[in-house]
Length: 258
Image (cartoon, rainbow, N blue to C red; front, side, top):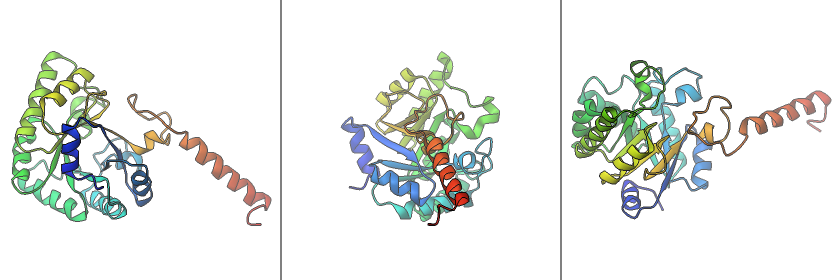
């Protein structure tokens, strides 16, 4: 059964946890669907994972369109979510609508944008124009320079209160989902209990309605670089390196092709 927005809403109300993973290509998307993932996020994290950039700021809207189209055509069941990259939506609600339209035409079912209270007007504008939005609060990687690095957010009572206020304002503006990154577990649980829309956590504890992780972290393809909140389920780097080394050895010895 397709994991539509309605299916995610139903899971929230039935207290069923949902699982999401990043995907940037056909192979990853198909494997994720076969494994039963409920959602796929074409994240601007591709700038760091694919291009080796130190942050997500260099990713373009054209790149997001390209990867969204690749993933969307590969699957039929998971919900397909795409990130709005830095510089594609902040200038005005109209700019955001134009960028969202391009990602929806590429195959996304919902778009994700970073920012708290400053994005309420934009979220309301998009929601009134048939654009499903997932708001992203807490650690927002596109603000890495402003917040001084990839740091946990909402640690003080004042900061936590602001995030709770932002979450409610974004939901009231029409956001269909809320992603919370690197916020205190108790705060994430409070926000989840308060909102009627599904929440997605990444480094936000078990209280969220759903969890998302970067595929390469889960598969152990980023040894030494995965965030502390990620869990590695496979020594992917080790297995792939061994396989490639065996190929090299067989070629050099003449064992392949035999």
